[in-house]
Length: 378
Picture 1 (cartoon, rainbow, N blue to C red):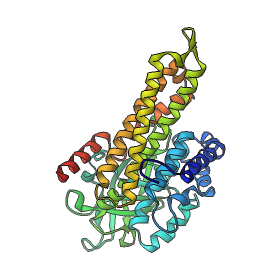
Picture 2 (picture 1 turned 90 degrees about the vertical axis):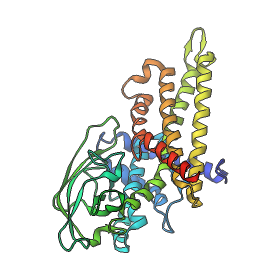
Picture 3 (picture 1 turned 60 degrees about the vertical axis):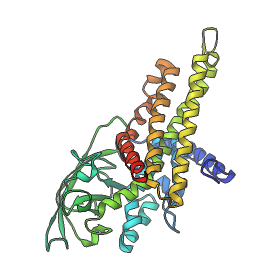
Picture 4 (picture 1 turned 120 degrees about the horizontal axis):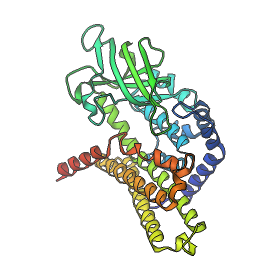
């Protein structure tokens, strides 16, 4: 397998994932309540071994496997894809930087689909500028040694406030990225509360309020004042797979538009016979394939520990999410008004496709990362 072609085993696995999602996971997703954690769906991800693929027993997940998982699930159920991705995002700081005790406590529960994770980096005034976060870890003992009490608010946090544990990034030192520490905070800690937010996308998202929440050295992920690196290592792994999620949505939209163009009669013949339609579909398919290949290449670079992972991950997320927005918009236009009706696949994708251009680093942030890396290389 190269960065530009999947082998027979990968293609077969992706087909099996799509069939499993359509037959077993999509019905559970459809029965879920929008904006709430769908625990039966999370449990099914565990029962069918998909979370085990995200957290293999022999080490970290291959970035390419994560991308294939997310792309395949997204083609059939964005809710199932997002439930799986959020488990990975919230838990990978524990995988990469946690202690043996932290891993032993939480990883088996996550893999089985019994525990729900959250990744709490963004704040009301610190979204794209993550290094500017102000959630305070106030010393409750000797300075720098812990314990601490967390005071402040996190916002736009997926799975909040229903998660069973949260990876929280708080300020323990000076301003900037070198003064941030990552903590693993169970949801039952005193002083921790939150509320759901009613968002455009149907997946669960909310706020977390920390009113003197106690944490200790045992809750630190990695090293004190080095939590920004914990966050960035997780995001470097997941950014190409956000692109894979976007590619899966774009492919689902294209498949629907191709079927509609073949069946719909207009101006005396099938819609697909209109050059204006067929050329748009051809252009959209080409853009999706280009984005897919860039995602696979970024994943392969991550798996080979290439020196330019940050740049490639940013490029993959940038191109794939912007391409998906374009693709869904074109496919809505080809369908016409029927695609705007509540419950239509494209109406659903139109709402879902907007958020990935913002979360885990907005499009503008990705461009800044790419430019910074280009200047550094030059």
